[in-house]
Length: 133
Image (cartoon, rainbow, N blue to C red; front, top):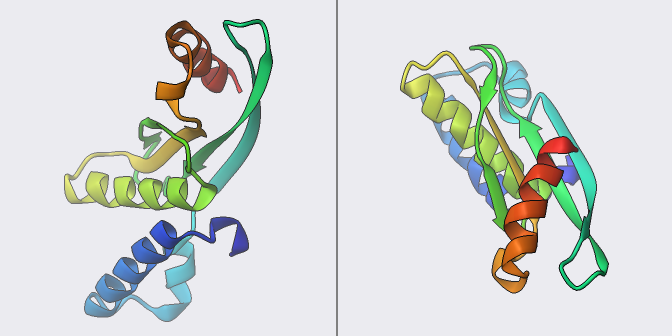
């Protein structure tokens, strides 16, 4: 799927295919297990400390919900994409399953370099704004 077009997601899919072959997972079930259940993209308007307003792209991906509610953190990185977020959510699904935790995998993030923002803006506004969206 083109919305996940990213080197990191392709790497996660390649890893999945190797394990799916080893476990003899039916080819008809592989896409359902590989692609996320839900993915949303949001635009986050943030009022900066200097009075200006900037917008940032945010993502939330829920990969797998069969084992229970999803869990996964939030990543702040300048080159973050929907595909990278989906790969991180897929890996969280595997970690929860292998650890026998009753959770599915998820991940969220904002495409921003927190080091380039004013300190108050990064901590006070991005986290709560992303959570609200």
